Amino acid sequence: MFKNAHRILFPVSGSLYAIPYILYDVPCYVIYMHNTLITTTILFWGYSGAKNGTIIHKIDAYVARITFLHWVVYGLCYTNRDKFVMIFLILMFLNFARIGDYYSRQKWLCSLNICNHLGVHLTGLIYIIYCLHAF
Image 1 (cartoon, rainbow, N blue to C red):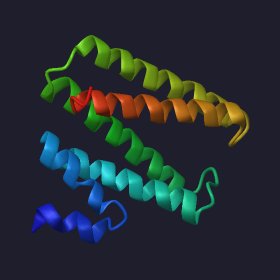
Image 2: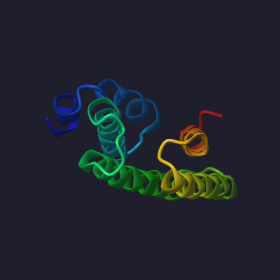
Image 3: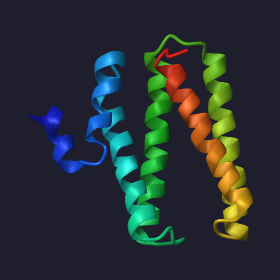
Image 4: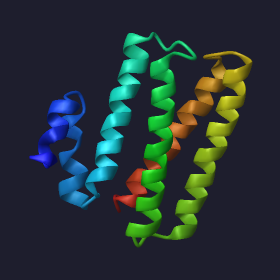
């Protein structure tokens, strides 16, 4: 019953759960946090209009940080991939996040903030695919 609870709690992202869990044996807590992140992100962009400083923006930021930590722990502790590559991707991710945060404090949703945020997402995607032994 607990294994399927996310389909009720997170209907938007429920179908994303099955692929990594079944094919790659990713722990449930990582998938639950990832689904929560997708849901809070949809709420942030869809319902708050991506306004800086709203409560959903703060929740989304905390969930993103927790999800990041879950993926780092999963990748470094539960996979047998090259740790140097993983640490390099983590440092790239953090660098993009730091620079994007700097520009978002200068002007919210400026082009440099968006480009660095895109770098965060692309680096995170590459890290997740690398963790899952997809290349």
